[in-house]
Amino acid sequence: MSETERLDRTDLLILDALQQNARITNKELAAQIHLSPSPTFERWKRLEREGYIKKYIAVLDAGKLNRGFVVFCCVKLSRLNTETANDFTERIGRIPEVTECYNISGHFDYMLKIHSFDMKQYQQFLINVLGRIESVVSIESTFVMEETKHSYGVGVV
Figure (tube, one colour):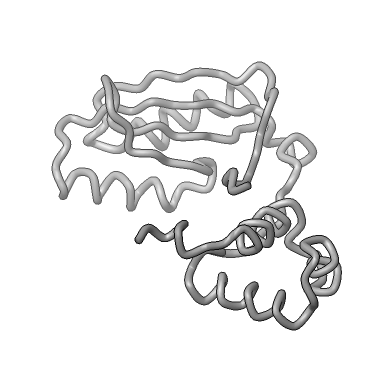
């Protein structure tokens, strides 16, 4: 049985509601999903215990923080083996400008989402940060002109 088969419609409604507003009170959540507060609370805690809810975060406005210049950067490594991949992902994990990193298929090995002040700062980032990782042999940058959809959740209902 898959993980989602263990979840019923009420569990999925709870997850969906929490994705929309993680600060919702248990009482508000119970009313929204048409269940009394006590079983709602128990389900919520079970979903946390079982790892369906990884963490709660505040979503910040990148533009207001002067980090609204967004770049998707594809990276090709000199070779892809466990040692090289682990070294690369460990280094990327320590770089605050990189907010997402995906191991991808195709011509490139990784896709990074990078938040920067502007083009000049991104150029310095390429030269002084990514350019210093020995295993990186190719980089292709795609600049975001407009964000038309950004969803933080996973479609569950």
